[in-house]
Image (cartoon, rainbow, N blue to C red):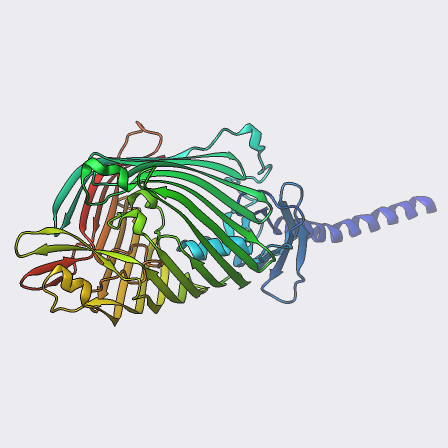
Length: 546
């Protein structure tokens, strides 16, 4: 009987204990369901997963400790059992610049999936030197979901084998009609241009591009380039181009403006903060037997003390170039050559700084020194003579400084620039061609420029407009090597690309384009002579991007 009582007492005790523990266990289970997680993948700028990157998750409230994880062989990481709240994610790895994402908000039972793009000093320098305004985030918050609902995306296996994927072709094909108005008349012509890029593997790609114009006075040519990575943090490119330049000469002697060029460029990251970029152009201009052979080297060094700041010094003997654009074309072929190729001589030196601020504001400043042996001006005299005058400006180098600020906001981009430069001016009393050559003098020029760029989702329209005001007429190009304002054409230039409906007929984007340059032509006028440095140009057509 006593054993029975003891058994009943034990059972009663266990029952009471169970009743007392059930709420706690239920609360613990509910608490587990309220915990959140952060997961994702870390890769470099080329999309290659990084193994062993350190991921630190720091809560906004200091009473909770930091959590850490290392990426696996696929560059993936996952940090579980986090309390709801706001977190900061920091990612670091040797030979890469650290990345940080603030304000990652986790809800109860939620999951945040991040894509982390670690950049090295080489990536930062290439963006600053090339004038690329896009400041993509290092960490992209791709998903926030709740465990109480079915996630729209699950991070299971994000790394795919490259050998199972086919080549990803990109490029464009464009057909246009172009009219260029100069003091020597208006020249019109139909033309086309194309560019096709084919990645061979994650580290190499081949690009073929070209341009054709039916008028012999317009540039035409074809070229190919090979971009590759010979080693880690080392990017190189080699290209060959063949071009017939646009020069106002006898069309029957077009061999005098033909050119074949071999170009090599190399960007090498020496340390975590030091990057060297160098290269050379070698070519032959003119007829095979009586042409001119040239070699034009360039060299630059950049110091990246942190991810948002770049200090650079460079020197080049190559011609000024603008960034390639699917509307404006491949710069090498689209650059109008009014100076004979054999007379082209350039020397450029520059020291500058670029700083990226927190709210998508980019500030840049530079001092520069330029020398061009020859400059070309359009001339229209009162006696009916029209043509081009080649000026000797070898003894009138230009130097000055530029300031530029650029901001991105809600799909729009705006920039302001100021340039002050000593350059070659022409005495307004010049009445003849010979007077122009003899009345060159050095003077100070001021230039203020404004840039606006928009990608309108509602109408699927891309607009770029650049306006430049100059304090006077310059016989030499003012700061032709600048790339912060996108276009070097003076006065007003506008580019519009309007997406057209394709109804699924094309595996790409079809656009109607309008490209107008130098609409408010700035010229030097006297009763007997009208002088201009840049022509007006309007180009319209159809652009197919894929």
